[in-house]
Amino acid sequence: MMHHPLKVMIVGAGTGGLCLAHGLKSDDVDVTVFERDATPSDRQQGYRLSLSATGNRALQACVPDALFARLVESAARPSQGVTFLDHRLQRLLAIAFPPSDRQAIERELPVSRIALRRLLLEGLDDVVHFGKQCVAFDDAPHGAVRARFEDGSTATGDVLIGADGASSHLRAQLLPSAQRVETGIVAITGKLGLNADTRASTPPPIFRGPTLMLGPRGCFMFGSAIAYGEGRSPGTPGSTAHAPLPSDREEYVMWGFSAHRETFALPTNLQALEGGVLQDAVVALMDEWHPALVRLVQSAEVSTVTAFPVKTAVPIPPWRTRNVTLLGDALHNMTPYRGIGANTALRDAAALRRALVAVDRGEENLLHALATYEREMVDYGFRAVRRSLKDMERFHSQSGLARMFTKAMFRTMDRIPLLQGVFLKGR
Image 1 (spheres, helix red, strand yellow):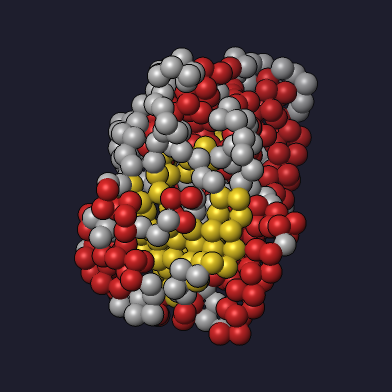
Image 2 (tube, one colour):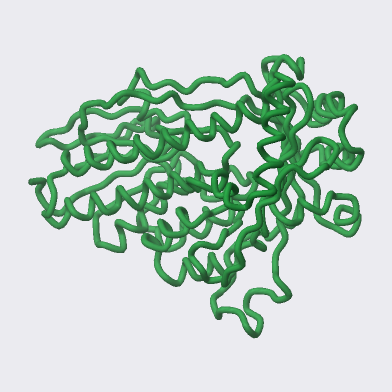
């Protein structure tokens, strides 16, 4: 058995890493988080996360009750359902979410990435160290592991966890054969502030919840709105008496338009392109689209319009477990077309927390506990990767026959509610 107490090092202060840190700290496990960002306010960007029952359960299990209550109370207005349309805004499928109490664990919690990170940093001042980019690890005496940082410093512990995202340095060293590849799809996203004009011009289904639109030539569009309140605000009578979640509480409509790279005919270096150029590239593909969708793209604030190549992790065979392991996007990075990446990372965090607590208490051997975690995480994690990739391929098919089949399938599901659970499975 591993000697006690266990000393855990986490690389990456993202959603999964911070969730794990809270869970370990609550069980008095010695944990330290090393984050490459210089300050908590670095990288102040990003859209909303939609926390499902899977993510909610993981957070509830790991973070203090008061923090989870604040998250629930301060989240944006939950979606009423998911809608699939064609590019002319004709309905293909509408899945209604069952009504539930705001406090119900099964209820969707939309929250911005910025706000969630701020929340999860609370209470971890003595745990998280900023400006520490981990570049490598090696063995240390007595079966320990040593993390090496870009600034020349080192840290030693019993176990090292890579929660450092899709471009993980730890994964590159631990599993050099693990691949993350481009799918051939490019996505361009933008957003516009929510005001009276936006409300009037945006297609109504987008305010109901995530709206997915299948277009010609393998083009796909996604729309979603962030709005707060259901007739009341946090802290008002009838709400839970918890301080609001720290957040900019920005209300907006966001869209994403994606297609095969050759369809856009854009240069390879997408990051170098200005927002206006990217907007024009999208509009150039929308001749046959409903005017309201074209206006949505044209009305986006240019500074918010960005592009990225869609990538996915490639499933890997089992590896020999050691005292270094991975969590979330560091291993099973997936496309955004199922919206489950963050929820899967949170599931990892809760599972790894249980394993490490058992080791700290002397109930489990470290390598056996990590091997069990890795086996289960690889199974459900890459199952999510495959589902996400399958949806991406379906939404971007350039075959007219395949698109016709997909639309027919959605229309059939729309008429038979029992079939609608297929698209909600795995969230």
